[in-house]
Amino acid sequence: MRAIAFELNLPELLTRFEKLGPRLKIIFDDSDDKDEPAASESQSAARLIKKKAQVVRQHMVNLQHHKSIGVRGPGINKVLYGSTNFTWRGFYVQSNNAVIVNSKKAVNDYFAAFDDYFTAKNAAGAPKMPVDSHVRLAHPQFNKGAELLRRGYNFVDGSDGLGRLDAGLFFLAYQRDPRKQFIPIQNQLAKNDTMNEYIHHVGSGIFACPAGVTPGSYWGEKLFS
Image 1 (tube, helix red, strand yellow):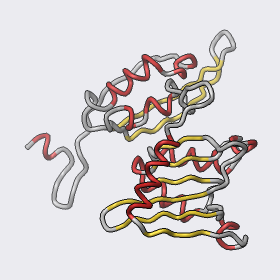
Image 2 (image 1 turned 90 degrees about the vertical axis):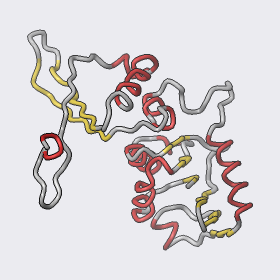
Image 3 (image 1 turned 180 degrees about the vertical axis):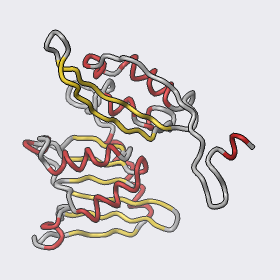
């Protein structure tokens, strides 16, 4: 699926986008104040990034007010175009327009144009999403599809003897095979991630966790049988 969004915050639409994960490519407008943390575009983009969606922030000239959604798959080829914002007001209050095109050729043309725009470069010839950004480097698209089920826990434990804040992050990552998932992703981050300037690594460990249980089985059954 492909989408271009301006003011996306309609809950039922955003929730469905989240379920698509890396199958979704979406471009969010970042003109004027649309790139502020409180903007609906920024908040929705952050939610989708957490679900591994492929997200780019950019705009056409002054803003990116044309909205669209394209879906391509077995038995379905649809593109929605129009001025309707993907918000509650856009769908139910404002007098906006939307057209749905049912055509495999139209969808293929849309996907081709979208992908060119998605990878567009700025005036200096560089990708609009920095190639050394943490989000880009950690994305499955740039790691041969490798993914992690991860969770971070912030902690603050007062200050040390010099008055510096004793704080940090416990980072947990769950996967089937660290050799194919965490290690290659982390190697790429270690070499290129600009966020490394703000990170001080303290320690790490790897733990083997038996699979979950099903009715009639017991924890660790496959490990001990």
